[in-house]
Amino acid sequence: MTKPKNPYRRPDAFTKAAKAQGYPARSVFKLQEIDRRVRLLRPGQRVLDLGAAPGSWSMYAVQRIGPSGRLLAVDLAPILVPLGPGAQISVGDALSLANEDLALFAPYHVVLSDMAPSTTGSRVADQARSFDLFMRALSIAEALGAPGGSFVGKLFMSEDFTPARDALRALFAEVKVIRPEGTRSSSFEVFLVGLARKPAAAR
Image (cartoon, rainbow, N blue to C red; front, top):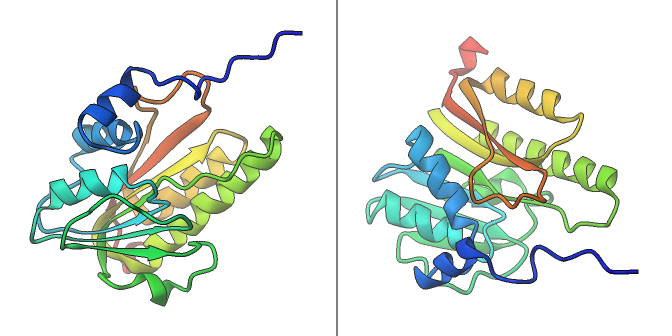
């Protein structure tokens, strides 16, 4: 029996373009498209990047927020690419780190989460773990995000999409669902974007 092709094995046009531009992964183009569509990142912002390795999102964000901005990149794996003097790297598990451990540059204007579970082969299990990661990232954004701030979180599509979107709507005035062009056709991920965080009194 012929084995199914692995869509991640061979570099595609996005992978080649990322390498040519100095980024370690093609995921940079997902954030770039989200940024272009919702005007997410601006000079001087403070940004928290959860699930940051290998570092493409952090590299892009640092460029956009400029020398007056600050960024904290968090991941279980070390980030080996240079991010610049305005960025700090924390190696740890966002699921178990206390909010205080993530508050270096809080309150954050933007909280990013490209976190995804290590896939198990069980789609249902992977979707459930993706939802847990999304909700943890959102809880961090609720605790450490600035009023009027923004959130971007990755989610594997499942029946948990509606509660994830509803939780985002409770915190943000505007919610968008974006599947960037750079997402592989075989992937069932989407990005939920929250804009203009509501003040506590309005929630």
